[in-house]
Image (cartoon, rainbow, N blue to C red; front, top):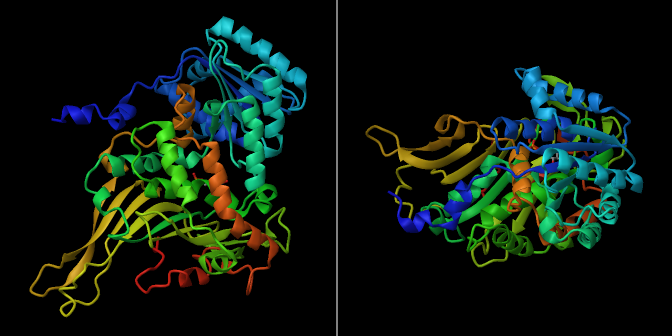
Length: 511
Ligand code: BG6
């Protein structure tokens, strides 16, 4: 039986509290875009099926495209049926009965006034009691315009119910623009009304970092510089830039994956235990990690940060073009599609322990994981009897095949003293009947519930930009050394990334 102290533990309470969302209206800006059809509406549907979506719920889509309510619903339905072909007309109609669409320019104040009237009407009609979420899924160049118009139309006020704004990435293009955006948003919304989204934080396995570390007693005592040799975080993708060249050319892998997703995973791996399971306590600890990143100088950017770009190659037996040959990409582009970075955190716990982060497009497969490699035993008793011992590694697989593996040495049965590495494995797929939820499902629900734990606070986003700026600045103002593109699509990236591991026992994991 669990002790009463454990049952009263805030971590337990936070995990098990009732989670049905209150009545509310969700207004999506950029509603005719891909994210609404591919991610947001399917996530809302999952919540609906699990009875977590409130019965009183309105969705209002806003975009520039002039389409009717009917066409808007039709498009969403078609997209949902791709992943859920079994959804009947009756279920769809009941789910989408309060879905509306409003065409209009983001700079047109009349659209915001009309929205305010419409929301009041819907509150009366459907009992949504003045609770509103404004979801910005537009290109970032209109974020500020939408936010100041929402403010001017009185929509940020929390008179009857709550008013929250969800801001998609990218949050700024660099430190200065992120600061400016933070300032503009805070002129209209208070920090506790602002939900900066990072969909990695909605991933089940990423949330499990907190439970694994702080709901068990066996990991924390060895989770520091005394036992850990280094940490590797990898997010590899087989896809190329696809149809997103316009965005990617001015973004590149550091802005797209490191400033947000990889840094957040690193924070959850590295942070100190918060004193309470509460949004600001957790975000305070993550912020300390971002602030503890040892600043890069020109020299360390050259030795601790490796950039790459994919050339033509083969993936799954198919010939694929290089980045510079993709539609919309400058044929001379130096935008990185690969980066590997060695980071030191200047904290008591992690002094001298390198964190190796890598992410890229067009690697052989899609895998995201964090791996902790432990130091070798202090006294190698078996060194004369055995060939080579492998280090212990704890691997947290974020996707696919979500789970945790511990690699350790064991004796091979027989007369000799031979050791071999074996795995102790936990797989979500086999341990739980229920599959893991989609990130957006969890994040939308949390926002409706007013739980900002899995959203990024303004100071975190600025600290992440501040840490990356020296690398971005040097990479954007200097040509890459040697040949560029420097890795073939379908390979594991440039060889230089191996050199920054320095020690013979440190190698990028083969995934
Ligand atoms: C997005 C990036 O934030 O994350 C994409 O913009 C990337 O370039 C994607 O492909 C990866 O997310 P996931 O959930 O597929 O790992």
